[in-house]
Length: 456
Image (cartoon, rainbow, N blue to C red; front, side, top):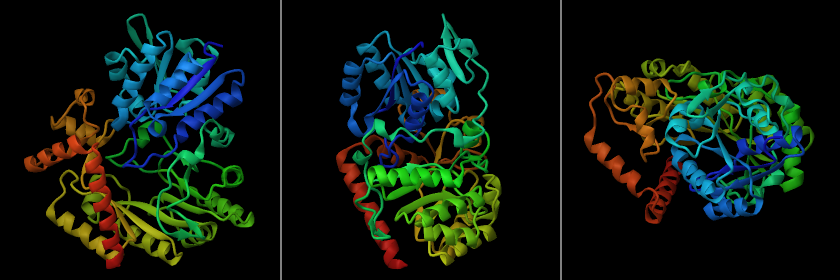
């Protein structure tokens, strides 16, 4: 073995829209090492919940020789900062970065930041395992590494074909009950505001290739798990941790409707009293499946609708249409499951007529919730990012700066740049981490949700 003590770290000061879910990806990596390399000592520390000092204290006591750090684009600097701190504490230790930003921006990370020793591109379980056990570095697929002053990128690693062979996430390495609840209301007598929401996955990948998303680059296809096996995982979490509230983090939860129905039948048969949230595509639902989902405990589904304009749906390569959207919402309602319409505003080449059509669609389908960040965020690895680079709005050096993402305010095609809104964005990003701003954002968001409910 090359590395015997492995610490997997979720960086401090990262969240997802103010919410801090458990690091499911790290728990999968840890479980894979536990199963295939039992002689290794593996630990997981979640700096997002526990803070920087907890990460450093674990390093002092555990003294890992390999530290795996997960970074998404908005939290890339937090990951790099904690790596620097760990290197000062343990100068002989090695770091390996993974997740979306590391997969896409591997060359920049390796060339600009010396605290990054390795990068696992794409799916990380097998890459990390082979590095730990000491397989020759040059033969580890998916690995980026250094040889003297050269940065070497090995060939891509094929995706894991059979996800059913993956062990359940290593929940024993964290305290699941330290994570927050999310939601409000009673579902199956479960108070969503009080129960920890446990993340699970049914699949990896997406069946779409939207211009604003990089999922296709990371996962390269769609794979799914056996429905009975997923039910086994839910039942284990219920019995071991008294879990009641779950969220499927899939891009397309219902990509295989047969297995979803199989899962629901198992939940019903085992009489598991749970509340479940998920996200899927409007072209991947039918009434039979939705009725089973309702009986199993699904209370809400998010659909990536994005726009009510047929022209915009084509421009963003959504691969859906208005009739499919209306049908999916109607069927979900018939099954008595809530609908969250995920919308995007300010897309490149979006006209005033397109915006009017989106508003008309929302009024027509009348979803229970509307999810939007109020702008288009541009991330590396997306077709939209390539359009922005061609328009000379930004280049790869942008990700060396402090901003978590690029906010699109015009500049592609004939879109005029909104300078006033850019100034507002700058103010928002500058103050967004202050306590006063977070309180203001919480109060206004809660007020808007309440107003929406009253109007419906």
